Image 1 (tube, one colour):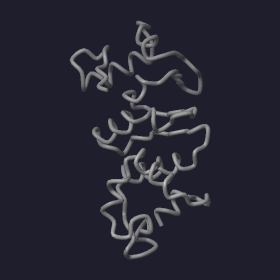
Image 2 (cartoon, helix red, strand yellow):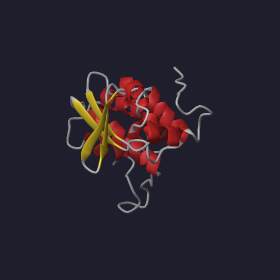
Image 3 (tube, helix red, strand yellow):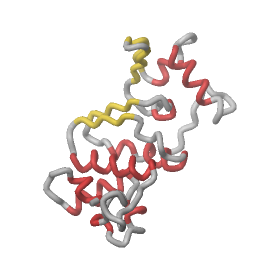
Image 4 (cartoon, one colour):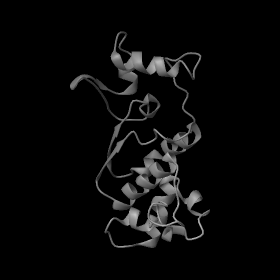
Length: 166
């Protein structure tokens, strides 16, 4: 079930499950399911199961990470299957999502980096750059700046700046 997928053997606390679902953005989708958290994940196991989209599966995985409440959370391409609006919603609520935790984000989508305390650029297994978004953008020939401006060119008229909406 979706509940078992979130719990992964932990003791059930309905209030904490609801908080995790809201933080991940999955609670709206859950409302559309007749069996709620008791819905089976995948028709492979039951014909009445639900097939989640890639983005919905990612939100469920984020809910699982939030519910676990570990001091460190590692997110590997956490928004890769999300549309731009869903990605914005995740990152807009990111501080609440990882409050009081150390969060490590592995991403090639650099839109996820401007709010990070520290960015480490790794190329072929070697740390090439390390700093904040601002300090890395100040490096004229830096790898980060080149990648960021290349990606941002599709969204901004001046890709060296980022408009952050609160």
